[in-house]
Length: 495
Ligand code: AMP
Image (cartoon, rainbow, N blue to C red; front, side, top):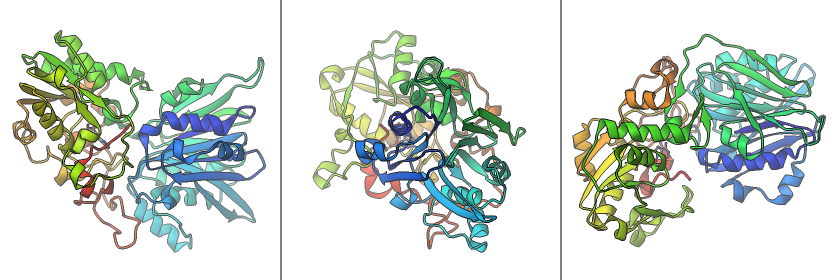
């Protein structure tokens, strides 16, 4: 997710490059909305990767002075064009009309309740995503100033949300009171000496880096930040909520070159590898990573142990989630489409194999088998996250409880299921030590089942706003399309 107010800059092109840097956060659809002050908002959105969605011509059409952009990874609503973002809405209020575009990172847990309330007021929807509900709440709000509308709507939203909204003359960004999902504020250098300083926001600081912006600070939980002709204005709407930043962002989700809470993730992940070694040393000949998700932790483990490290696999970089499902003949090769092991490196070796996380165990099971087939004499798995046992309701599609291999199994039982000689998961204390943070300000519900938000009255699930599935439980088997059924033979691929 990205937002920029920058007259004098090519805002749609900067949005395009920022989204390119954020592609790992969502591969289902991409979109940019742009406006010149006083003009209309134009949105281009489509299913597919950033590189597939936008042409040079689109970027010309999206010319303007302010823009927002989004890449989608679905947690509420299916992978359909209607659910792609930015969402554009307009509504008549007090004889005038408010036109806005909105992009959302996160997941609301009271979407059904808000949807029903708006429907009763006669508001209609063209998608089944929770994000359009927020757009409708803000568009129809009677307040004159968009910031006042947002300040009133924000406390009514429950769950995870980092959101950017644009009107014809400003970009307003806000973050949920718990700060579950990240949002970074950046400053752009003037295009000419003495020119105006302009600002932008992005889900991760890596997007700021690649457009030449400087990471000023993170948007605070519960803060509403306006980027406009007046520069940056801020107000904190809900200062007192329990902070609950997602610990899985550090472990897996965010790019290693992003900075969160003062930590460069590559460095924090390296420390996770060092701590993994301290917690579970083993006699071995070689450390290898499951590329790319295990790279940084494998380097840390090799550093701490003094065991040599090498590439055990060559990874095909072009396998994405949208990859065409293989036929029966190829399916039995499973992960070979993504990872090809190097027998010359592996044969006869006692291996320490490092990956970031195990969800259903399909990836690890096949990795272990591939390494054995390539001649490894021992395979010791080291995972830089604790066992994942509980679904995420706050914006990460974690599969269902029943599908999670660690659900209801001890670590030894999981090791046996996976066919490895030993398995160690990083302890929760180890995670917090590596990132220099405490549980009190973070969310680790996927590991502990302790959800930081009160879940009373919560209804939902990915398809909660879709016909026939209203109220379906998030933990119900099969409620996660991207990770179920035929796709199981393939990895849960994130570039
Ligand atoms: P699994 O085969 O279900 O155990 O998937 C585990 C692999 O998927 C690990 O290598 C992770 O890097 C990656 N992964 C972990 N969580 C997610 C997620 N929420 N979405 C996509 N991929 C994930």
